[in-house]
Length: 311
Figure 1 (cartoon, helix red, strand yellow):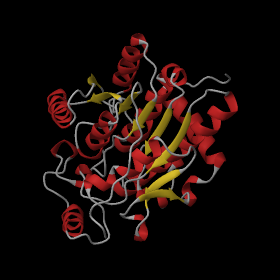
Figure 2 (cartoon, rainbow, N blue to C red):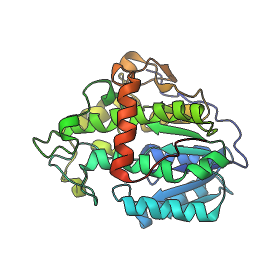
Figure 3 (spheres, rainbow, N blue to C red):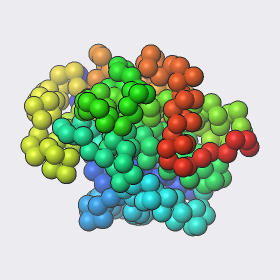
């Protein structure tokens, strides 16, 4: 597979972008590319020291880059509300929201500060609440919202009888559920915005498979060493076999950020594991509007973060 895949990011001068998970990996790369295109980039981070290092890297790579750190722990709805309150009080419109951050497959069940299964609570509910609370700024900026899902969303289902996996936790199935729910939300956001005249657009991206930090050693997730899967992914990626790299994995989200609404973007190579970004056929798990509406209404109830019922 070609190793030098890239895209052109259009001029974003005067635009404000919020990128979650921008302290490392794909999120850092996305934030750097948006800054290089002229955007003012807000980087909400959980670890301030790590965020400072990431911001310094962007400033070194992009002289004059306008980046701003804010505090955010997506596994805490109070933290989500605090960030949203800060940005809304600041009053500047948001033109791009890239919901990129995530956690993947803790070997044992963990819970968020609010008692939700960690992956469902962080990957989906935290981003749902953030988007809802930022809606005034998103409307003011006629924003594009891009939500980063996963190839894992192409299979599995939402465990409606046990959303929080309190009876028989399975890390991979819970991860798939979180990304299916998140994808259904992203598509429903575009539909509801068009119906209610909110003026924002929404779409999805997935990075394919690449050696990002998701499967790497994460002691806070109960994973003290790299998984065998991430070691294999690194080996294949380094040799250009099927998979992408961290640099190519960020391209679908960058494409989606200025691409068509209501579309899933991902790598176009074999199995959609790597390759240049392109629109993709929606996974069967993401096609039910009834399921999307159920996810939306359940998420409003669980988070207490409600979208308006009319324009």
